[in-house]
Length: 301
Image (cartoon, rainbow, N blue to C red; front, side, top):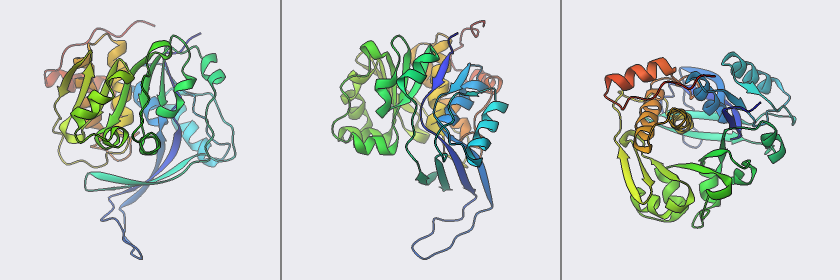
C-alpha cells in the first residue's frame, strides 16, 4: 500500500535554547530561559504534514539511542510512522534563536535512507534534500529542499533539472541559499536561474513572503504579519509540508504559495519547529479570515 508523503530529508533531535538573551562571543557565557528537546529537520516536515491531515512516514534513519527513542516517540504521538532505525547515534542540532534569526551547531553521522527503502514505501510524493535526488522513485512527486550545507556544496553549479523522470514537483530555497547556489545578486534573478530545476522553483523571503517561477512567470506571495517572531527554526520545513498539502488539495501554484507562506509565518510564533506546526483547522481558519483562496475538500482515504 502506498503512502501520501515519505520524508527522506535527514531528521534530527533539536535542542533549542529558548529565550536566549544574546549570542555569546568567544569566551562569553549567555543564558536562556529554557532548553527544549524536539524533533528536527525532516521530522518537522513529517509532523507538519500529519497535522495538516496527510499520511506521512519518516524514511530518514534515526539512531538506536536514547535520542532516537525520543524522536520516534514524539513522531508516533503525531501519527507519523518511522521506518528506519539504524546507526549508533541520532543526528543532533543545537538551535540558538536570537532576534528573529537562529544559529545552529549540528552533529550528523551521515546515515541516510536508500533508494530501495524509499521505493518499498510506494510513496505518492517524497520530501528530499538536494543531494538525495537519485533516491526519488519513478512516478513520485518530489518536493526538494536545500539546506545551508547543500547550498555551499552546489554553489555556482546548481543541478540543471530535477524534473522529468524524477518527478521534480517543486524546489524550495531560502533567499540566502538561492544567492549562494546561483551567484546571482537578487532572489528574482536566482529564481530565474533555477527555473529549469523543477516545475516550480520557490524562493522563501522570510517576513517578506515568497516568490516562485512557474512556466516562465514569476509570482509573489506577500509576507504575513504575525507579530515579533519567537523562533524561525523549521519554517522552511513547514513551508514544504503546507505546499505539499495544498498541492494534494488541488490548489494552483499561486494559492499553494499563499497557504505555505501563511503556515510558515504562523510557525514562528512558537518555540521549536515542531511546536510551531499548526493543525489544518487553525490554518484554514486563519487563511479564510485573511482571504486566501478556498481549497477543495481533503481527498477521502
